Image (tube, rainbow, N blue to C red; front, side, top):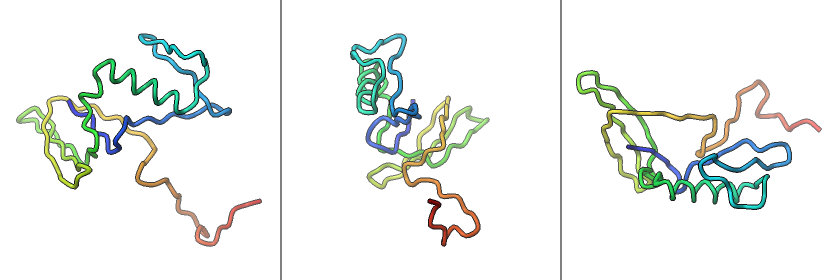
Length: 124
């Protein structure tokens, strides 16, 4: 099992409600915190604790960034090439691959191209 994570921690992102908080709790592990509405640090602590207690973190290859994945019908396996944070490239094979992708990039935010972008100073 590979869960590639280029960061050194669990990859957590969420879209906060307008007041900057989200509701906290998994059905199988209700939060013991008195706060019904939780802030970012509380959510991170809760999710990391839940992952540790559930044995999930032992399956995560922290410091790995998946660069490519190729399916082989002949072998019925996926070949995954990943970059490690120490600079090494590793090749791994799996019979199952699940990908979860989102819009967020840890390497840099999204800057759209549009006419006049270089001289645009914002609107007041």
